Image (tube, rainbow, N blue to C red; front, top):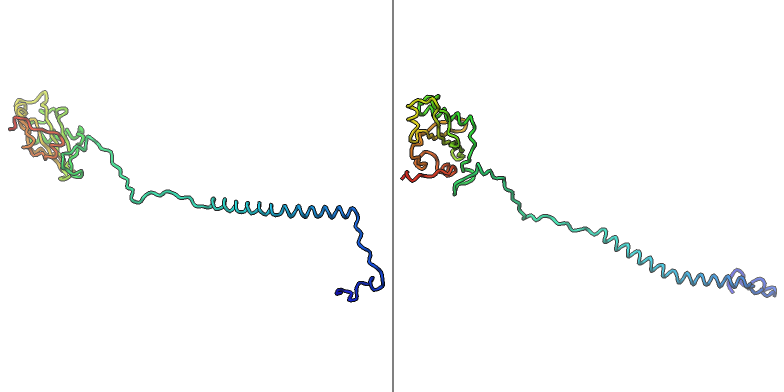
Length: 222
């Protein structure tokens, strides 16, 4: 027998039989209780391990869902948007076939413009300034032609209450109609008398401006 005593335990060598171990009823119950706890632990550990595994995999799945990037919509590179400027109906009437950049534009005639037209009319007709009351209400046309950078005007004039006979006669038969033009920064110049009947197509007014103003030929123009 191997061990710390090669020839056997010391009590064997002196002829003493070893006393068998005593087991009390308490010890038996304690041992049985211990075995039951061990068996209970053995049964519990696999279930606990399985639960942990499920928990781990569940957390992993949640983590993968939480970290999964969300797709975001981006605007297409080929999408085009267009905007249009507001239209001023009083200043964008154009004739057909004309481009927006060269089309004539209506302009409002101020009191200063009307006074300047009266001065140009008097300079052309040589009528006394005191004989001309002013422009006839609603008769003034005013426009700008970008293609030539010129301003155009058409107006009728009224005699004053003290106008001479000569002036009254000169204003008859379309003599009170004046056609005017000026360059940017310059003064008005009267180009011609309108005459009676007034035939726009025979006048010096550009056709695009005639169309803007809606001038039409009377039947007497022939």
